Structure formats: structure tokens, C-alpha cells
Image 1 (cartoon, helix red, strand yellow):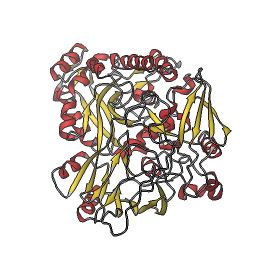
Image 2: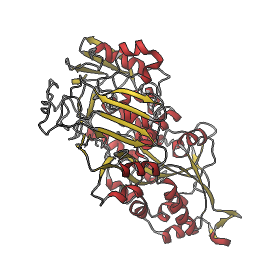
Image 3: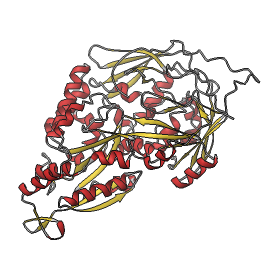
Image 4: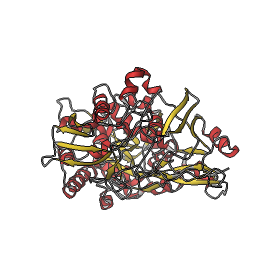
Length: 558
């Protein structure tokens, strides 16, 4: 099982951070079968009659900072791409608003008694925007592509060995061992089903000419400027969380690449754009009481921000150790006591976050708020006492010393969203109890390339993933807490990943979190909620089980 526990280092981080890049800072999971929506999935509501006053349409222009490298799920794990191709491709299953999972392209599924075979029965009325059928051949083709070693997201399929065609509308996943997280993985847009004929026709250009069965189709892509989507006229869905079961009402949905937040805000106020996703909290709060705009609570419940400590790899391949000065748990506890997380949530994130003292996001299976009692509360006086006990005495300039060495640390953070401001607050609070803190701010790509060999003592990361195996990524990055290889923890995570019974799986994840917190390998901070700001004329946006925007019912009022 260990072979499937750790995902590929840099690829794993990029995939997890992809959601956070999308969030610009920062649903529940479970098990289930079948579909709580209609079984035929073909009930599109009647179109409004021309001139009836009920016409819905318009152009929704979304401003965002990130660019797209590819719209092929097999070629990218970038957050900005995810935001687009979730509108172009459908998946076999999706998360249910009520918890658990329901069918999307699959009508239902079955699991063998030994957990090694999952059989999915496809809806027979679904087609790609090209008119080609969504059938077993298309599903097998899509997953054979995704399972190739060079595909960034392939590692998340874990012990899936093969995907086989049973008949034209039935496929079977063959596993090397039970994998409780399979539905979590299959519900992500990275495993959207592609049109094989389009892939074969366009080859390497499929990423610029994607064809799926989702609600929108690609109309135009001007690199560095805009991506234009139009409704897929052949689209049908059985989603219970939208009213419109057919093609979206919008005439067009345009993603405008605008690197500067200030320019986005100016465009929103002027009407040049009418929606911004992932706006920093300090900007979003300015629109809260303005009747010309609406602030919607978007992606939330699937991210966890935390502080973690640098580690030293064991030369013999054994258990790694914390870097000094954090090799003394009292110094790690002092950090937790010194930082006022509530102030960060209230004054930096303006309440667009929930204080979370556990390693799992608040909306993910296995989250247990009672575990927060294991994390030291904000108490600067307790932090000072612990440092005194650890032999760090106050020296000149308010910096503690021990054996002639200052209590100096390198503090790394991503240079995105509100992170730099939070880093400065943490720096100030640590210095008040005697640390000397130097901040290093890095973009995602630089962080990924430098962190494995970088000289970091303390880091602040914010990761997002809608399943409890986010813990696998937290301890599997290859630096910082990613080098935390406590054998008890790894064993618990491996057992949890293959446990089919929800109660036993939750107990295993609780034990895994207890290991992390009792050793204080990380200091949990918060789970973010990402605001979406729209002009008042934008109507009908709904949210899926994970808080992602749904545009099926959306329109722009004249």
C-alpha cells in the first residue's frame, strides 16, 4: 500500500495548490451508489417563448489573474485550467449536495465484495458536443490516457490497475487493493471524459480544441487575453442542484486574463467585466454593502492553511527529525502559543475563513473539531515560559539565545493572495516572544523547485483537496512537514485509504491526526471560504457540493 500512499512530490503539490491558486488564498465526502436525480437525465426545461419577457441570456465576463496552459485534463493540473475544463467535461460521478456521491455520466455503480472491482453503468443518452456517443469505449480511452506515467494527475488513481469495457455502456475498474477514495478521485474534473475521435483528430492540439459532454464548448482562445465559451446545444444533465437540465441560458461565458487585481476591480466597477473569482478578502469586503454588487460565498470547506517546521532527512533512510531549533517540541509549542490565529481570520481574511485547529479541512470526511484541543491556544506568556524551559534566554535586541546562537529562523510563504500580510503578522508575533524571523516570499513554481533543498525552518502553506487523503499530500511533499515520516502515521493513512467502512475509516483518520497533533508536526490555522463578486445584474449562479460555481441557471439581466 505504501507505493500508492505517496503521490509524486512536485506534481502532488502542484495539483493540491492548483485549487488554492484558483482560490487566490485558500463539501463533504462519503460513499454511496446510484443517483438521486432523474434516471434518464434528459428532462430539459422548456425554452422561454420569444418576446414573453422571460428571455435569459447575456454574456458573463469573468476577470481572473491566472492564465491557462492547456484544456486537456491529461496535460495540466493548473488551477486556472481546472476552472475552465470543469465546464467542458463531465465525470463519471459527482458529489451530491446532501453528502456522498451520485451519478453523472454513470447512472449507477457496484463494488465487488473484495473491493477490487468497481463496475459503472453509463447513461445511454449522453453525447459529446460533437454528437459522438459517450460510451464505454470513450471512458476506457479517457482513463488509459490518464493512467500514462507522464500524466500529472495519474498518481491520484492510486491502485487502479486497469479500466475495462464490459459492454457498450458498462466499464469496470480493476484495483490492486481496496481503495476507499476512488469516488473522490473520479469526481474531480481532472478525470473528465474526453471525446476519443477529437483526441485522435487534433492530437497534441486537443488541449486547444477540447471536446467533452459538459455544459459549454470552447468558441475562442486568445492566449494571454481571453477564453470564450458558448453553451453546448446537446448538453443534458440530471443534477438536482440546478433547475435548468439542458444547455445553459448564457449566450457566452468569457474568462478574461487580467493580471492586476486593481485592473479587475476597475473593470468590475465600469461593467467591462461582471464577475471576479478568488478576490482577496480585503477587496471583497468592500462590496458587501454596495447594492450594485453581490458577494457570493464560493469554494469553501476543502482547504487547510497551516504552519509546519523544517525537517532533516535521515541519512540511513529511517525516521526524519525536526531541524533545530524545532527539534525541541517545546519550541514548536511556543510557535503555536505565540500566533493569534483568530486575529488573522478576523482582520486579514475578514471572516472569509473558519478557524480550524485540525489537519483536515472542515468540509472533508474525517474532520473532527474535538481534535483542536490538542493544539496549544494563543498565549504569548506560555510561549515565553516554554522557550525559557527549553534554554532559550532573552538576549540583546529582544532576540533569545542559547549556547551563543540566536533564535533565528527562515520563514517561507507563498507570495499570493493574503499570504504576505499574514506572514508579516506571524513574524511580528513570533518576534514579540524572542524569535528573529526572516520572511521569504515565493511564487508557486519557485516554491516547488526550491523548497526540497531550501533552507526553510518554518513555512506557511494552504492546500486544498476534497478528500481526506489531503493528509497524504501534506506529509508527502518531500520537504518541511512533507518529510514527516512517522511510521505510525504512514501506517494509519495506508489503512484508512483501503478501508471501505466509513466508521472504521473515520477512526483511522482521527488516529492519524492525533499523531500529527500530539507531535505538533504542524500548526493548523484555518479553512478558507473564497468570495465571488458579481455585478447585481448577474443572476442565477448556484454552487455545487464543494462550493464551485454552477452556471446552468445563470444569466445577465439587461
